[in-house]
Amino acid sequence: MKRIVAVIIPLLILVTAASAQKTAINKAVIKFQLKNLGVNTGGTINGLQATIQFAPGKLESSTIEAILDASSINTENDLRDKHLRSDEFFDVEKFPKITMKSVSFKHKSGDNYTGQFSLTIKDKTKVFEVPFIYTATDNTATFKGGIKLNRLDFGIGSKSLVMSNDVSVSIEVDAAK
Image 1: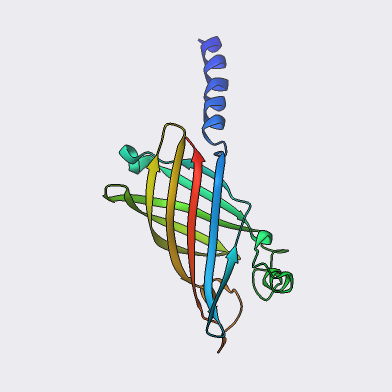
Image 2: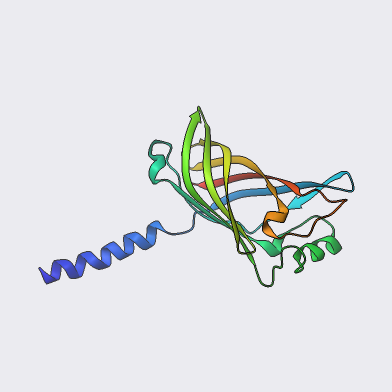
């Protein structure tokens, strides 16, 4: 009996560790946009790492956890990028990661779903409903969705007469199945 337990426990540990491995991301495009001086401006954030266990037939046990590298913010303007990385905005020295973790999922119709996600930026967490489209082939799962958030809820910048508080974020991820 002790031998069986001695064999089963390490196997369970290996299976649990394997199931928590990061998902291979084939492509990830995370874009943000807001108005500044009345003009749409924006950029991208890279460095996505994710653990995706999404099954349309098993939404109650599906999970998505994603981490973005906050220092990878790119607006194609080095001076602006440096400013956005400063403690006035993302404070990437103190808060290097942006995280998003699923709470629950609902199927709407066809390939359309919504997920409740906890988004954490600068140690401030807020729950959002994120509508998304999920499609799959034999090897690839594609997620396309987006949210609108208020940057002030996360302490990103301060009130401004020229910069909008509302930020639109679009997410497109192709992941290995």
